[in-house]
Length: 149
Image (cartoon, rainbow, N blue to C red):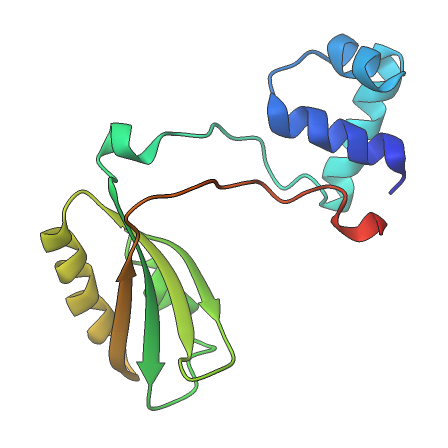
């Protein structure tokens, strides 16, 4: 991945609806060359998908919490169980005192409590510790520059 690929990724993260002509102009390529580069980035898996960023509060997801999940057994095979709960946006097997870290969005704290009950129902879960976010300073996408240093 060279500096042009990284620049294309940055441009696409800012606005994935830009035309190939606009992308090419921004990085010094023709529209056709920009299209070919983006196609190759998709083939290599650097671009997983094209999506829209939705404001969680606008669609009923005002409560954000991170939940540390304790277990009595290895949880590495339980990804489908966590994915079955639509309020869970991310789930990660982690090292440390807990086994899994999940990111949860709900409309209310009562709904968060219900999600915690459903997490407890997952085989092997022995406890949870939820941290409710009061304010988000910022969220940023993965930087295409991560691996260039």
